[in-house]
Length: 188
Image 1: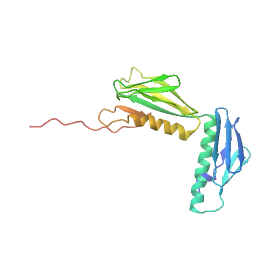
Image 2: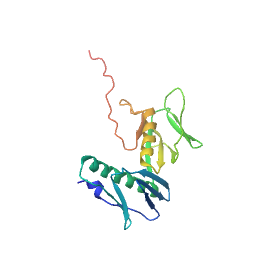
Image 3: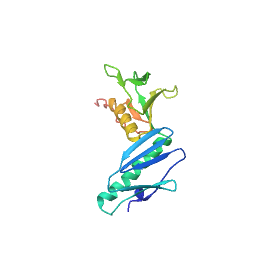
Image 4: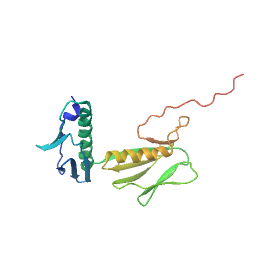
C-alpha cells in the first residue's frame, strides 16, 4: 500500500482544480500548472481535496500512485505559495549580479556567465554579509514549478561546484562541504 498515494491533497483557498480526461490543471494566485496523469490512474476532487486512486496493486500502479499524488501536491503548493532554492557563492573574486531579468555570474572563468531564466522563474541576488568574509553573495531562484526551480539551481551550481580544499564555489544553502587537508610539508 502506498502511504503517500493514499493521502488526499488539501486544496487551499484561492486554488482552482480542473480535471479533463487524463490532464490536471491547477490555477492559483501565483500562476497555473498542468500535468498529464497516467491513463490507468484516476484523479477526483471531493470535499476540498484531491484524491488519486489506482486500479490494482501491481508494482507499476503502486509506483505511479505515489508519484502522481506527489506531483499534484507540488503543483498545488507551487501555485499557492511557490518554491525557492538559495545558492551561496564562496570565493575571492566571485560575484553575482542582475542584468535586467538575467543573472550574471563571475566564477573564475575567463568570461562572465549569463543565465537566462526560463518562463516562470526569477532570480534575486543578495550581497554577502560583513560577518562572514568568505560568503560573497547569494542567489535565490524562485518559481511555481518545483522541478524547474530545482533544475535551474542545479545548473547554476554546476558552473562552479564547491571544491574540497578551500570550499570555493557555488553551493546550496545549508549544504555541507567535506574539507580535505592540503599538501603536508616535507618531513626530514
